[in-house]
Image (tube, rainbow, N blue to C red; front, side, top):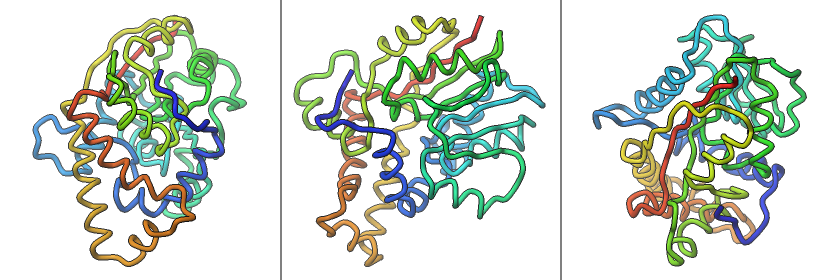
Length: 280
């Protein structure tokens, strides 16, 4: 595991997303996850919806199923699962501002969005037919407990899928020092695991791993687009410049993190993977 020099907590993750609320929506979009560019000509919205569609396919979702979207952000993925697949979706976010925006912009009964820590979720055992996590396990302080809660809340035969930021199996010292450790620290990741470490955690929690797909080649374009949007914002909007120049703002370094992540993907220091599994 890559561990940042400063400890990250659920509270620091929530503050990060609250502080950067506007910038996440303007730079990354309301889905707050990577896009999937299979053909290369997809629009950003097409790409993020394509990633959601791939996750839904791996989950084998059916209309009427109870689904939990762990780390739902602004609820973009949750709404898509409710509308396109007909699922009854519960989404969880740590961010007060993400939840407030989603409830104001999209008032509706399905999905049900909650501000709640997955590690202390309070759901009854066997509540869900499927659980998904698109880029939220990275923010979990206790990753084994993250998986234990997946097993506890899934019905027998239920499916789980997670899209994950992964470190390479044996990153060099320079990659750790200049890319992976700062990405964890600046992005509020308590740790970043490798493919083999995630496989071990899935196995140890009792899930049956069905498959894994390395999607790095199809998602890295996300960060090029984010970097372009960020630079455009800095050049055209004073509020962006003021945010970056404020020495009291501990999250302003995330602007540099955009470039680190892009370099990490392009050099192989970082990977992007999709795991899917079943509860026996």
